[in-house]
Length: 229
Length: 261
Image (cartoon, rainbow over the protein chains, first blue to last red):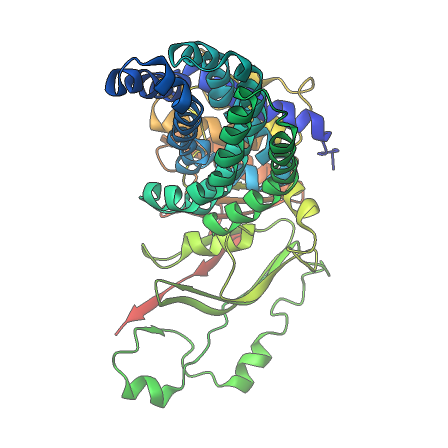
């Protein structure tokens, strides 16, 4: 037998590169969630009115809810197309450990959907008159929080990938898990606006991040095995 | 090669009394339990392989509340080519997926080198090449990228592999850099079959490999199967066509045939 054991890093890079290549050639995957995010956030000032005070009060909530829904919108792509064309089976049957394949796919998903959101968020924050002191908190919560959305979302997608119309079920499964992130992230941004330390909220988000980073890939692997059964 | 289809004989009287009992086998119904146990002894004493490469014991598969097969025992040795036959919906794909470890059987176990496949997953997957009825080809990637990803994922060393030469083997010269979404169904199938030319895995499980493949392609594949089994591998496949270049006695058959009553 040839040694079929690539190092974990090589497998990770292999799958990451493949998913990014596919996403860059199929630009909808990148543009759709980003466009949704921008549209939702820009509609709020139009609907509510341009008073700076009102807008800056609700800005953290709007940005975070929009980011959350944009991620939810893009989750379906994570495993669906691989499941439909049979490549998911091939991955499950490869001699590589599933969690590393899954982790690479989730990281690719975050790079495709989460990262662009973080990059445009400051611009949208200007539009919503976000308090100047809150920008740091906004960026930090998004940076720690959006990977959690991808990781937890992946569990939901893996569980529903075998179901024909799993979209509704996916939202029901995943949204409750997103709520702690939403609460602590917006609370951190509000606290920062008052000039108070927000490290407590940030620490909780970081804990959620590392917890889901270590556990979610295994849960996703197990869920995928059930879904392809 | 020892291949027996063991048939669970649902209590004869019971089935007679219950015409609604959907699944009954049309063969071996007369065997009683004792006879069946005798039948599980190796049928072919000339087989010198002590260890079957892949074997299954007492497999039972139930799909959509329908019994597809029951108490199925299979032993597949190196050098075997096994054709799974049966009408549509008789459980051919289910059987292959169970043998590959993708699906869990309702009852029974699959063994690789006499170890249950759940306990030696990594070794088993290194020695397994499963091609399902979906080609597993990404439309956004070129033929060459698809092939080299599939090969690398299954452990082939990138630098040693000449993907162009392999694609030439499956008549895809000139299409290396075409995006797979621009290629036909048969060409998709060829991209996934191209892996066979580089595979070091001994167990090939192929679900309808000839779908959408032209006549010359089928012949080339059969040739490839011959080389593979000669090198000590085994091939398990489903197909509705006969394997033309193989002598009938060379091909072992598993027939899944239930009858509705």
